[in-house]
Amino acid sequence: MARDVMEVVEEIKREMWRGVKVSQLEAILRVLKEASGGREPPTLERVREITSKIPISVTETVRELRRVD
Amino acid sequence: MLYVDTSAILKYYRTEKGTDYITEVIEGAEAGKHKLISSIWLILECTAAIQSWLARRWITEDVKDELISKLHSDFDLWTSIGSLILEDVHRVLIVEATALITKHSIDPGNAIHLATAIRWKNQIKAILTSDKHLKTAAEKEKIKVIDPEEK
Image (cartoon, rainbow over all chains, first blue to last red; front, side, top):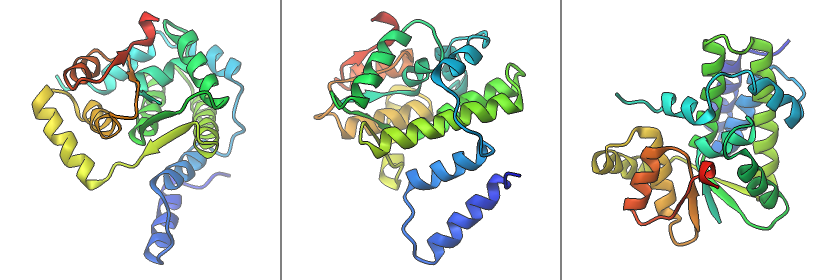
């Protein structure tokens, strides 16, 4: 059973407070690993098969994320 | 060295206009032919893109986990072998990004990417992006832009 992702954040913060150097990249990758529920990464082919069902392009997805109007 | 924006790197994961070009660029970086650079903000935007597909029910929670796992595995690999450099979002960069929002009327995500790219201006050959707002702002900052959709 995967932990709550916020537990990892608290763990990282405790390490930082103890003076352990944790880079932004390392911390974010640890959060992502937990967020994936500990799954094995799929192949690129499997990923592309999944995303072929997304009805909008990634450019459009990013545009929507960045919308300011 | 090439600066890679979220709108470009995500094309690696979805077959569409520009996917062949980005795949070639990423495979070239993995083979040590060139380096890629971006802001660490890239990971947040890629994650948010996947999350937005879940929010719209285009993917299930299980599939979202699979996609996040692939992101984690690729970014871990690329950064550990040195094919991708991810710049921290630090305090000064936020100030620079704020200035760029007012200068170019761009959103915070584009501003963080542009501020990071400007810091590496002398080392990067171009910004890879399909975001028209980032393209326009980068060109005004005299940075060459390559749109994977036009390759």
